[in-house]
Image 1 (cartoon, rainbow, N blue to C red):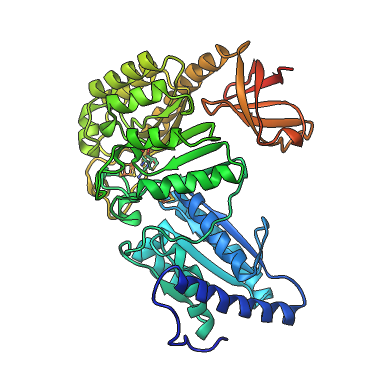
Image 2 (tube, rainbow, N blue to C red):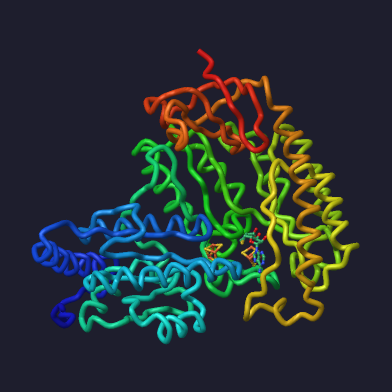
Length: 476
Ligand code: SAH
Ligand code: SF4
Ligand code: F3S
């Protein structure tokens, strides 16, 4: 237990958080003295890059409080950063909590926290309260930077403490440091939230309205990353190409890309995710002439049927989408196009599905993230009639996967024999004489090499295509 929150706690951020970090640090030191060992923390991240980035920020706060990070599933503090985009993400959490309950019954000092998108849903929080009361703290996506303050509240009474905000607060820039997973690459949020409200999607409901960060703040973060050794940066947003519209001095995403391109020492720029509705000629032109923007575009289709695209609230037609694809391929000839597709959206007929297959054949994606439609309570699609039976979805999904794999294998085979630049990332987990890296189009390459190559960009000859990845040889 700790003492009541003193009135001297600063009101301003980040001073307020630094104050609570110090308080928690004292508690951690006392616990360590009691247990005669270090306290460990394990953050388990589900979902997308947004959550991965939040986890980096959370880990930094834990480290400032004195916790030592561990990759183990069990630690003195286990924090689940959850995703709720599809139902199976939720099931995964409940499965893990069952396991942790047993662990905690043997280690009563253990703390369990849950944060992230799923905690923005009141029904999920209610379920934690009633079925998993051994959880110690719950917070959401809008107050990640307040981890220490939330933790301190938990310590006051040592019972479940819940602090979930239904919408984002004033603080866009948290100004607390974060721990980067890799020294040679990092991601930078350019915008938070989403205003698109695709009818199947829960993200706008759990991540709030779209907010862009000031370009100066973004550039400062990119420069700091480069200073600490990063060669590659990933600009993150749910809709990167609607970036900047709501700023006091509005700017376009294309302009932001040009500004990031100017950062000396930066070699690769990636971004996730653009929306087909907001793509512009300016953006394609900037990509085409850039020396740093990677040769890859994730361009989520969702469906090839105009009827379904309308019901999904996607704001484009199959023809508009294909016209952009043609333009992109004309201006950026080697671009690796990737996409997201949902099979089994309510009311999907065989005809609708064949329209999607038609786009797959024409767009020739290097890879596709395909999803079976998952009903999300609170979204308009959940109430739509004609939910598609499971066996029909399964059959369509299998047919689609076969087509995707065939095209992807053809595309990857065409790469064999080429010499391409690879940014080396890590020693291969299965074979320690091999090192793994990525091409500018994001494909994985494995080749003979050692840890001294990590973080370097070097030419590699692609000798064999294994479907989704290559085997290569360093060009001496
Ligand atoms: N902002 C990004 C995607 C975020 S979610 C975009 O617009 O592309 C990532 C992907 O999950 C989506 O592109 C979609 O294909 C899939 N997805 C979202 N909600 C889903 C649902 N209810 N069922 C199945 N897949 C879903
Ligand atoms: Fe979801 Fe659509 Fe927003 Fe992407 S654009 S996050 S799919 S609502
Ligand atoms: Fe999941 Fe939240 Fe990302 S719902 S996909 S972790 S924004």
